[in-house]
Each structure stands twice: as structure tokens, then as C-alpha cells.
Length: 278
Ligand SMILES: Nc1ncnc2c1ncn2[C@@H]1O[C@H](COP(=O)(O)OP(=O)(O)O)[C@@H](O)[C@H]1O
Ligand SMILES: [Mg+2]
Image (cartoon, rainbow, N blue to C red):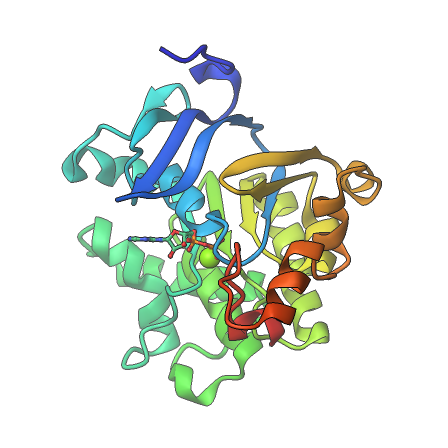
């Protein structure tokens, strides 16, 4: 058995020797790390490198091929859905694909997780809760709007309000600024910082937006070929000696990819998708 490099109680979230395969595709390769409570940890890396898959393991939406995941010392990767339900109420998540429900109003979107987990009897308190959460993200007053009438940035803010509806201890953000212009992105970054300060949550942010990573991250972890290749604060990452890290943070194409481009038609080692260039 592999040597255990971290212990379950080393952080609020701990992954121990986490490996994930989809058939023959190795996505995560023996990752061990502990996430510190109350801090913002950013996961970076090129598209397709396994950031979303990694994040999903933190909330047991994906199960490891090998290894384990702990929330506050409790192993969660082997729990069934019924046992996971109360644990998931401690998480808020803003996922790339977890957009707002278009047929629901802003109010209904924000109350959705509350209704999912609790039987509502006190509508006045619910109204107050929605008002308070929307106010935190600067969207109070939009309760009766439908997502279709909101801008991209406003939708993200409502998604954030929904993520904090159950007063989570952990917030998971998957590409929170993708598809937003730089100014709107910065508003979202500020909100991530604000929520961390005001709610004292532990945040995990998956992104390939380096501006966002430097701004919100107490700690930045870069994934490459299923492994952690850099792990430290913004200065550490900026000055990292590894070429792959430097290429990524400066948005340069690596030699191997360039060679593949010149050959034409050769598969990239990492997949770039149109969203990388938005
Ligand atoms: N459910 C799945 N079944 C098979 N392959 C998957 C599945 N989910 C993700 N993958 C693959 O795992 C790799 C990492 O995906 P992902 O974590 O989404 O990357 P990203 O870093 O862009 O978030 C990709 O090659 C993707 O195609
Ligand atoms: Mg992703």
C-alpha cells in the first residue's frame, strides 16, 4: 500500500493518495493534500487536466479509483447518497455546468437548495434569507427576475447567492470567471474575497484565469498530468522554476504543443477547448 503522506485530520478537506481513472484514461495520479480551514485554495492547470474531476471528489460527486477523501476527519468517498446528504449541506457550490434554472425566478433559484434539504414552513424567514444572501452579492431587488433577463455577471452573482443559501462551511467554485469580461470577472473575484472574509468559509476555486488565481488565492496548486506540480502562494507560483508552470501562468504554448501544431493534426497532450479563448 502507498505511504500515507497526509492524515485525515490535517485539514478541513483531505485527499489521500487519490487516483482517478476513466477506463484507461488516468486523470488523477496519486494526489495527496490537505486543505486548510478558512483559506482560499486555487486549483489551476490547462483545460482537461482534471481540475473539475478533482473538485467533484471533494464533495463525493465522483468516487476515487484509489485513495480516500475526508471532510473534517470523516471519510466521505465511501458514503452512500443518503449519508452524504447532510454533509453536502455544509458545502456551497458554483459549478461550471451548474447554471441557474432558467424557468425559475432568482428567488426560486436561491431557495432551491433550502427546499431540497428542508421542509419549508416559515416563508417570512425564507424571504429574509433570500434578501440577505442577495444583498451580500449586490442583487437584492432582483428576486422576481428570470435568469434570461440578467447579464452574465449578474447570473454568476445569483449563483453565488444560491451557493451560500445554506450557510456553507466550504464553497467550491468551478471556473467562476470563465466567459466574463475582465471587469465583471474582477467583481466576482472581489465577491469571493468578501464571502471568505464575512462568512469565514473555506473556499476552493478552480480556474485557468491567473489574474483571478493571484487575487483570491492564499494558496495556488497547479495540476499537470494528474499530479501536483506546484503548490504555494502567489509569489511562489510566479517565481516557480518549472517551465511548464511558467508557460501556463504566462499563457505561452509549450514546445511540445508547438511541435504538434506544426505537424498538424497531432493530438495535444492537453486539450484546449474554445472556452480557453473566451
Ligand atoms: N465522467 C467522465 N467519464 C470519462 N472521462 C471523463 C469524465 N469526466 C471527465 N473526464 C475526462 O477527464 C479529464 C479531466 O476532465 P476535467 O476535470 O473536466 O478537466 P478540467 O481540468 O478542464 O476541469 C478529461 O480528459 C475529461 O474528458
Ligand atoms: Mg473543468
